[in-house]
Length: 165
Image 1: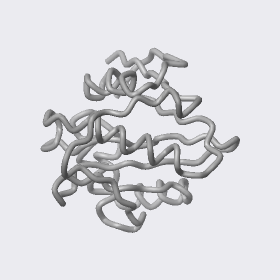
Image 2 (image 1 turned 180 degrees about the horizontal axis):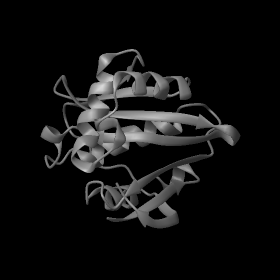
Image 3 (image 1 turned 90 degrees about the horizontal axis):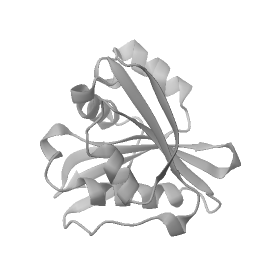
Image 4 (image 1 turned 60 degrees about the vertical axis):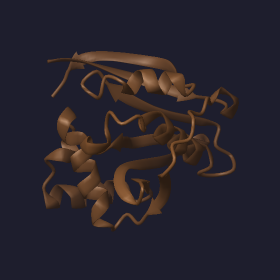
């Protein structure tokens, strides 16, 4: 299957266009040892063929070891786990949003714009000196993902075509 991977970024907080607040939607730090980190990544990625949906326990151990500084946040709606944010701080004060998404039962309920708003605010506030926030999305991800990123103020800086999963 052909896959298009699109890389988007913001290079200034003034580019950020927040969505309207959704009552009950919140973002809170999540300990990397929480079983929710694995569970939510698997559930978010399953409909889109993400590797996180099929990783074995030993593969998760290796994944965590390769990303010792990755930080996680739980998206919740009315107190129920609704999604996940994971960020990596890179050299030159760049933040990569590595994982962002909602679990299937919260998709299509009008939460994505504000969920991304919360995620982008967190990414910009990861350290006082953040100068760029970026991520990538795929054509096999949810069809609303890329338009949502653009609506929030991200601009495309690279596109790659290739064979997907």
